[in-house]
Length: 134
Image 1 (cartoon, rainbow, N blue to C red):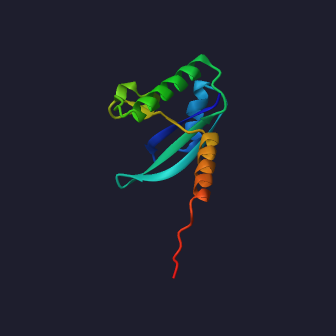
Image 2: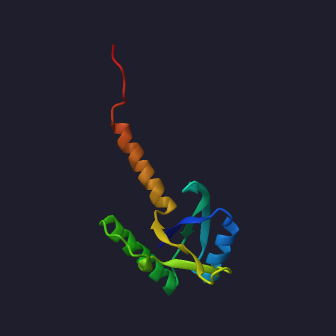
Image 3: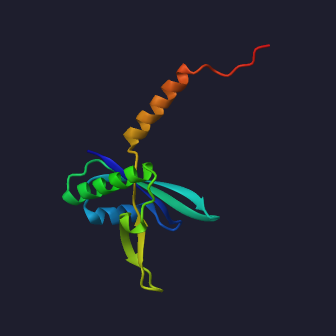
């Protein structure tokens, strides 16, 4: 079973290689990382998507289950407490000693996104095109 997660906000200085290194340290299974540059609150930032081919380890299964439950709760309109959101702690802030972390959220796998896109295209193909008749 494959699953994907997202880091919706990371500093603009974080690289794809750094994210790959940190997830590799967790030994959750085989994965790939996608990166996207964004602007958040007028500041540059990055988003990352981590796509796992399998979730064979017990910890990977627990993470996958937790992310899925949180996604279901959010769909139902519930506000998820920060303490309920899994986070990957990747370092310690030298100035104040606080953990540096990324919050993790479930997202669609590439296969799920492709199926959704194809379904949307098929639905649009059945819809009449807009035209002007004179």
